[in-house]
Length: 273
Image 1 (cartoon, one colour):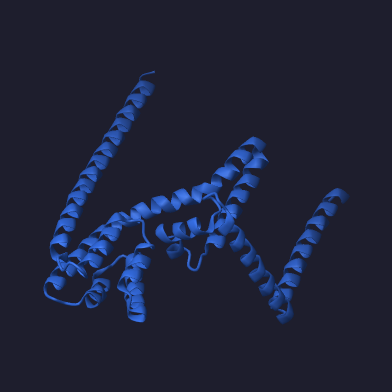
Image 2 (tube, one colour; image 1 turned 180 degrees about the vertical axis):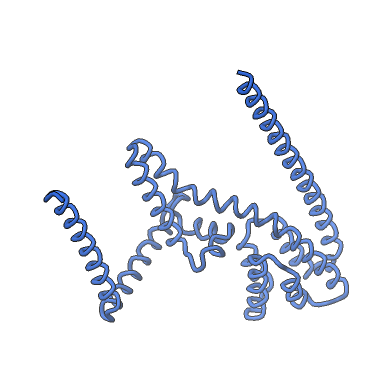
């Protein structure tokens, strides 16, 4: 083996040794109590600084209140436990920086285009995920309307009915929100304020309507009829969704059949040559 090859192997081994040494040193420093306290202090100060500046930001892309509403309404904090507006912005920045560095390795222009674009891709992903959640929650929302309509007509108090609603719900995100709603009502005894916090966790018109009907039921006493009317609207929309799904499946079948015919045609032409 030539001297050049030996030098190459030695340099790689040295690099690995340096990486392991740095990793060990960092691990040791993190476990040291004094450094841990200093790190936690710096982390807290940095978070306060970013939060303060995000609250002053005018554009939606970095505004704290806008991001707080976004991660609540689109289920980001349900999928990523404990995430804050600062954490979400940091995640988006890291993702966009990573994509920019990877694409710039191939083409600088592509990197400069895809990097900033990637900052907004996570928003799009969570918006689409929320649309899917809304479709999956539709059956649960119908069951909640049924439970509320029947029990309110029977004279059961609304807070007791909401506990039953938690039991009939299957969707994990909606179930968690109902559990927090009933706990919030029990702790603060303020139904209207608790319902506002409940609807803040969703971007769903039927959940908004549900909260509105519950609030009105406390004053008008005519919630039963209103639940009937809204349930009818949901049935209509669900029927339309089923019809749209049928059309989607039919379109997919047509595309597959067309591709099969094309494949058969191409194969026939090839064999006849």
